[in-house]
Length: 173
Length: 206
Image 1: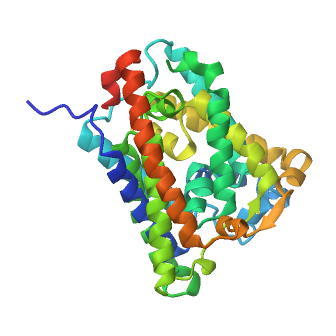
Image 2 (image 1 turned 90 degrees about the vertical axis):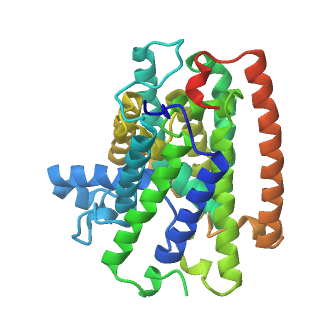
Image 3 (image 1 turned 180 degrees about the horizontal axis):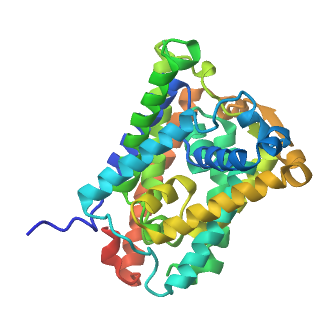
């Protein structure tokens, strides 16, 4: 019988080291940090640009990504996130974790978890745009070059998390 | 000398191909580290699983140590990279919004994409939410967010320079802090999980 690896994970320091090497490579080759929300932004802008190109060329949020006439999808962060998806699929296949399921605490219903996930996504969508990036682009990539913004983001995101953790503990413990 | 693409030393198609391979490494690290499992991510806030702390600080410090070594040996000029500008007011407000989003949603954007594409339905809902949030922000940017986003600008601020110490000393201090945090976190995790373990703790692969 095949060994069940679905609850096994890589040593966290090794996983962190691997991600750190990718971060060095990103800065060395491309002058970029690693990102997550930046690619979602480009996909959202490309979608709106397909439906309403006149609007995107006028509106202040959308215009910088479409004004050179190239597709917003033709960007470093979009290719990087396509890679992230491929890497996650490879790893999940190796560990036998490729199956449809809802990840949650056993104490809450699927419905509660999915509503919470949707709401959390909305907050991150707004926050990552206002804050110029998410955990990867703002905090981790910022910390790697000693940027003040990365450390402000670190304090605010984790400080905010610990501040609110007590009120939402029923979702998790 | 790096960074290569900003100085025109590699072509745009090669730069995008490199992005793809760097992404693959990043995605393997995230999935293998357990970042598609929302319970492992939320654990850092409740003390039952500190994987986020360990992976995240190891990655950021590996990056910082590597980049400043390259810079010191003249193999790369950090000044020529995408160096983030600091806008402390919107970053603080947005950070607290994202902290709340982390506690409620149990992911951040990068981890949610990995979760969604490896079959986690909660990850799919999170990604849909993120698109709703981004579009809502984009459509209301001018009346609601434009002024706030550009307030508190400090330019390309470096935290070591702000504190009046060298980059190397600052990274050394953060590294010592991280090692102490890892040891304390392991102690807290052991205590929480022996006294009052969460249900189905075997799913966390601790």
